[in-house]
Amino acid sequence: MKNIKKIFLLGGSISLLEAAIILKKKNYQFFVFTSKRQLQDKILNSYLSLEKGLKKYNIKYFVCKNINKDKNFIKNFDKKSLAIGFGEPWKFHNKFINKFEGNLIDFMCIPLPKFRGGAHYTWMSLMGEKKSAVCLQEITKNTIQGVFDDGKILLKRVYKVKENSKPSIFFNLERKNTNLLLKFFFEKILNKKNLKKISVNEKNSLFLPRLYTPINGWINWNWKGKDIVKFINSFDEPYIGSSTRYLESNKKKKLVFLKDVSWENKKIKFHPFQSGLIINKSKSAIIVATTEGSIKIKKVLNEEFKDIKKKIELGKRLYSLNSDLERSMTYLPIYNR
Image (cartoon, rainbow, N blue to C red; front, side, top):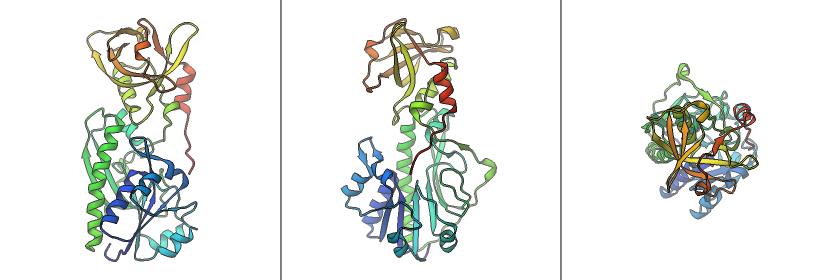
C-alpha cells in the first residue's frame, strides 16, 4: 500500500458513499464507478438513493456496464491505483487481475469465511449469531462475486451483536464498524503503511443463498414458537416483513406481512392445531398461539403496507398454504446487474 496515489470505489451501497465522503474530506484523488441499477438502490432509511447521495455531496461518478471495457476506468487505473469493490456487479477479467493483483480488493460485510452468498443478516438473525465482521479482501482470478473468494484478508473488524437481532440492527452495526474500518485503512494508505495479509481458513466456510422476502419469507405455523419468532424477526426491518394469510372468513383470505414480534406468555402450551389462532388483542398488538406459548405481533400490514391489526378479529387464524411454503423453500432469486 506504499505507492497508492488514486483510489477507485466500485459498485454501490451506503458504504461506498461513506468511503467517498471520507476520501473527499482528505482531499485524496478518487473515482466512483457504479451501475445503473445500483444508482437507484435505496441506501438510507428507504428514501435516499445512491444517486441522490452522491449528488448531495457533489461526488462525481461514472455509470459502467462492463468495468473491463470502460474507457474512463482503463485510462485512469494504473500501478499506483487501488480499487475497492462494494458489491460491484462486474467480474474483472483474469488478464486485468494478473496485471494489478494486490491492488484490487473487495469490501465484505460478513465474518469471512462464514455467510458467503446473500441475505447475510437474515441468515445470521435466523441462526442467532452473536458476532459479525467487516473485511477488506484481495480479489483474485478465482473470485466470483457473491459466490466464492479466496484472496487474503487485508483488514478485518469483528463486532458483537445481541442474539436474535433484526437485520436492521446488523445494518446499523455494519455501518458504524465499516466507517471505523475504512478510516483506519485510508490512514494506512495515506501514511504509506503496509498491512499484514491473512489467508482464509476454508474449513470454516459457510455459503447461504440470496433470498427474496415476498417469496422466501412465508411463515410455517407448524414450526415451534421460538422458530416462528426468529423467522418473523429475520424478515423485519428493513424488509417488508414475513408473509402469511389472514383467514377473515371462509370467503375472505388476505395476504399480510408481520413485523415486530415478541413473546407474550411462554407458560401456556398450545396444540399444533391451535398454532396461528388469534387468541387475544391489546391496543398495540394481536396475540397469537404457537406450540411453545403465545406471541404478540405489533405490526400486521396489508398489501398496501398499512397496519390493519385493529381490524383483526379474535378467533380468526393466520395460516400459510402448502403451495406458499413449497415455493418459499424452492425459489432461488436471481438479481440482474
